[in-house]
Length: 337
Image (cartoon, rainbow, N blue to C red; front, side):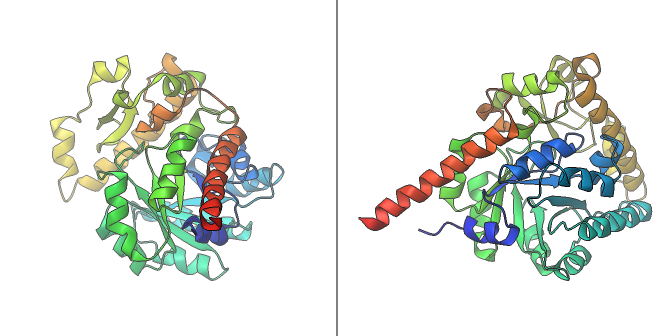
């Protein structure tokens, strides 16, 4: 049996169909490089790189190149929230391409202009989607694959279960990456057996030695179970998956009635989204760095069930590689018989 991950590995040049998803504020250079060096692929989150971890993008990429010569990815959020932001993102993409990055993960807006830039130098673009209509629009823009964000993901999760989302998208004819709910090698193997071409994880990689998140954050992930994950509107105005902590219970999970009204208003919604975006960036940055001494907004997905300790990122990748090899060996024995 030839698993769908073969195409994804060929596109990216990696060894294990495993993506360390871009995370604000947890995507520090050492974590990204460690995942890539181990055979998966770490994805750069440029806002985290510059405004949390203190590296200008080009400098940060070159620093990571001292840690690994394996492929790296880049996250491009292409929503047209402001022209200033969009211009900055275009500059970042040009820098990433100039520094040899060839795997791009886009999100939100229409990625056609990213696809044009990346395809011109032989790279590939995958787009985050939560349902069929967004997947079709991404394919119309020319993307090469889809990151399928399901209801078990951390951060801004989808609303559809992993198996159903796969069934909705499988006929589109491109590699599908499962994003959400997977924190251990067993879940990884099940996703590959179900037909996914790979897995994107964030929560599992926060609880690693290389991640610079506060130890309170890492231990909250280790100690949590899936029932502890709740959706809160208090961070960004739209539901975000976080760990239920005493602080979350104290403040509640619903945005104020005024915020909800303004988010639906044609004139005010963009201003309110900008406000919430700046607020959430500040809150999440300090919560991840200061732990329980600040505000315990700890983004995480239901994959916490598969996380039982803080490990080196390479050990996580290797355990997943072992699971993949076991699938290949099993199928080789079946074919031989």
